[in-house]
Amino acid sequence: MTDSFLAPFLERSRWFGGKGRAFTVTGTRELLRLGAAPEVVLLLVEVTYPSTGSGQAEDQRELYQVPLALYDEPQERLEHALVGHWPDDGTGRPAYDAPADRAAMAHLLRAFGERPGFVRLSGHDLDLDAPGSLFSGEQSNSSVLFGEDSVLKLFRKVTPGENPDITTHRVLTEAGSTHVAQLYGWIEVEDLQLGMLQQFLRTASDGWDLALASVRDLFAEADLHAEEVGGDFASEAARLGTALAEVHAQLATSFPVSSVDGADLAAAMRTRLAASVEVVPQLAEHASAAQRVFAAVADLGAVPVQRVHGDLHLGQTLRTVLGWKLVDFEGEPAKPLAERVLPDSPWRDVAGMLRSFDYAPHAVAEAMPEEDPDVLHQRGVRADEWARRNRKAFLAAYCGEAGLSPTGRALLTAYVVDKAVYECVYEARNRPTWLPIPLAGVARLTAG
Image (tube, rainbow, N blue to C red):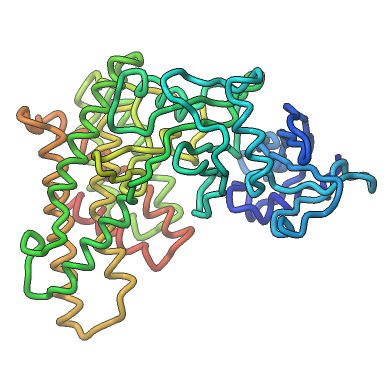
């Protein structure tokens, strides 16, 4: 197997995390092979990034899963998914990206419960004949819908050991949680968890899209307040807060609960802030105030931590006729797996949702055509009002009758500032025109 077979495919794949970096394919390994016409091969690909020499002592390596559908003859219908030829020696068969091929995915679906490595949980009568279709949304994995019965998420970047998306969904499924899609099974070869099969939520609507629709309704009624508009989102924000509280409670009983020293937590936040200022110089004027927010955490002593979502925002939620569902428990994608499975404070998830409520109205405003100053001012006032109303509704429902304690407030404020600082770096690198959104959040949060 040579680099020429896979490197171009990786470079053009939206799930590949090495875009813009020099890399070589330094190894491949066949994990399993099944089916016929097409034959499906789950291939493990090692990618190596050379050392930059600036604080990076060794080459970095990542592992990616590339499922291949092998045919004896070219398939015109799959031309868009052609990877190359297997093997890459001039004699190989046409190899296509398997998630794009219904016939290949039918082999994977029927393997659940029948082949070693395809683990199937009891409790659901899986439709093994449902047709598969690749989900076209932007994501870091590849998801295939099987009729209206199930969804198979194939992990593209893989790491040996536990995948928190599988283990978290499993314990919540077994606990009877109504706030996640039920886990039906997973694919595990040796010490690699390669994919998960779960419930298809037929009536689901994306939480981020629903929030944006609510904001558009508000902006269309210039003289009305958020609570007066038909698309008011506050009741949904409250239901989300209740759902998250229940999920956190279930996770606390299913995974170990421990504590971290507040001083260590604050130190990590200060380190991230210092690194972020190097990328976003505009943060410097807020750095001292942010440090004071983090200093309040340093004085808290032991801070309880547990299994959490780790990367929660409106885009990780789905609204169904039966209520809100949380999805994608993999944690922050930029973090190594070893860090993503570590216990953390539940306030990290709460902070992610609060920041998402701040983002939604300003994202809509950013996409709207420019108007005269008075219209822009009014739009800004309404955006802040929408964000504030939904943050308040969500937090009140999450905290319940106990309310927000002084310790909880100190932790939550620090986590929200920490999240906003992260967002500044992300936007500076990916969407510079959106940078003012998190920068304004940092300014507001650190203004006392």
